[in-house]
Amino acid sequence: QVQLVESGGGLVQAGGSLRLSCKVSGTIFSINRMGWYRQAPGKQRELVAGFTSGGTINYVDSVKGRFTISRDNAKNTVYLQMNSLKPEDTAVYYCTGKYYFDDIWGQGTQVTVSS
Image (cartoon, rainbow, N blue to C red; front, top):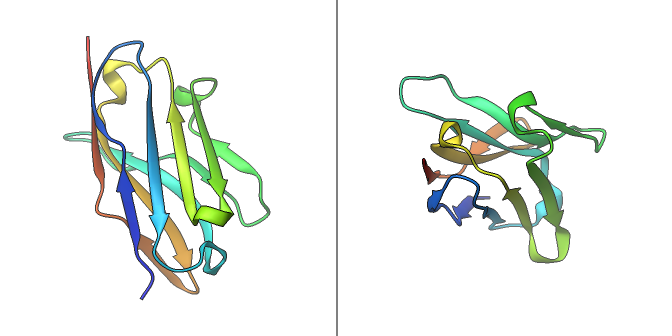
């Protein structure tokens, strides 16, 4: 059973940085289209950044130039580097990927940005 485990969330002041990590319990090559979603209170879950099946990267417009998604295959880990954080980035951040035909999700990690 492949699992995704996020870490790295926390409380940070506006303008600060955090790096989220998503560790794949199996081999990262078994997971396609890995990415990060977030869900703020009262809002729908939205894609923040993700790898397409073709290997390109998509970002939601609100984080372009501030967030960077990357992966370290040797460590079976995907990262989300978040810089210049804003209060509106406050949300629970989820790592996700497609394992064969199934969408799998991590448990989420809370990111809170204070003004």
